[in-house]
Length: 209
Image (cartoon, rainbow, N blue to C red; front, side, top):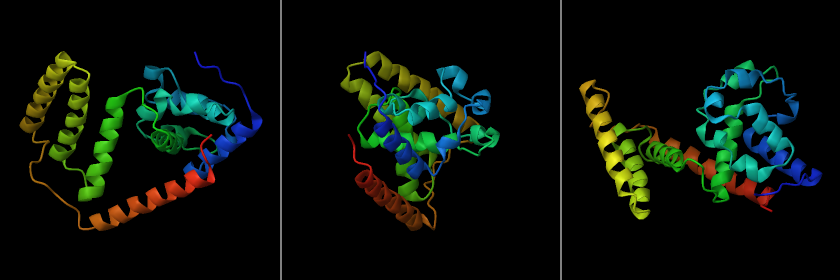
């Protein structure tokens, strides 16, 4: 079991890094827990935005970056609308998600990471999400992981369940086979490239321990 020791200097550095990258003043949080009462995934995973913010402020970096809420937050921004100080928890979890990937931390739910990566790749390449391309990229990553680990039963289960889902979506006309692109997709790529450059700059300003 990992032992965490509070260090004021490390805690301040971590908190400032998260604030700078998320543009959220987490020091304004006074733990009223209004965000917790509205969190759509809090009950399921047993963790809420107020606790995650407290974890960041106290400098528990490893636990914060490995937290289930970081990957399972659905960015509904309910927590932000309820916060009296307008702290957007969704932006904080997104920031911690990026930091987690930069430090090569394996997420507790790898399939959520595959979903995220497939979504971002599709958006930056085509300017919008195409259902078939997006689902295909996600399934390839998920099935490949099970094949590498020799989990053949899980592979078959995944193929069967997703095939049934695809059939249902086709029946309801919720899947489009035509590959659609956005006229401004070059701008989307430029925004993404700029964000990546900003990320590199942030890593230089806040070096990893």
